[in-house]
Length: 302
Image (tube, rainbow, N blue to C red):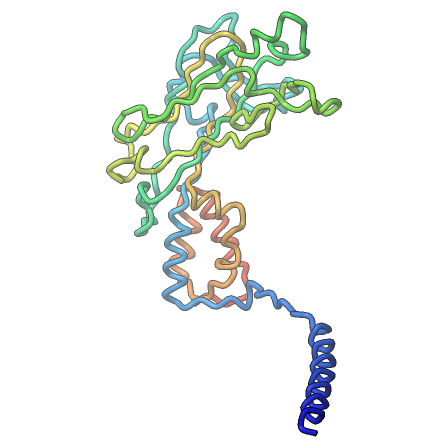
């Protein structure tokens, strides 16, 4: 009799378990996103975050404005189908001698210096924007382009604050090849400017270097620094150089929107700091980005 009762109880429990299991399986987990407005930061967190964001360092060494002593080449307006009338340094294989495109003036930091401003704390990303003579490597011609693809174009040299060359990056013609829009399997070059020359494989062409290498002592960049980013042109084919872009990791993340939620949540920034961010001339694009995000959010600033 006891055995029969135990079996009956087990069957009942099994039935209940089956019913509840079905009901449980019907429940869907709801993921509730945390919007920028719902993110909360203490005043201390806001101060620390803002100090970090203000260590963003980004500049473009524009050839027509920043090169006081360019060495080889000359400043022209590229009014070709590839240039859209931009000002560049043009090196002609027919008339210019091989040599350095140099003399870039590194922007001097503004008044806003924080505990994160030391270059040794960051990573730097460097990328030149340039194009070469299209006919050197395209259209593809039998017994002509194979050798030309390995033509040396130029060399980017990174000189640290102490005057030591800490990185050399070679660019050859092959680095400018692209995927043919009409045939993915064939080599092609549009003739357009490339930012860093990613090549046929479309690899990330950013040059990455540690801040400890370019500024070992962590000194502030000023008129006495020997920091330089220069191009040595070999003279084998025409080159048009637009600029050399330099960003540290904070600037790269900031301008890509990674920190937008934090900036939109800042409601305890003093008017004095806001005015400083607005008026400083250094790293203008980064400071403008920070200013616009904070001033346009839904909170009142103190």
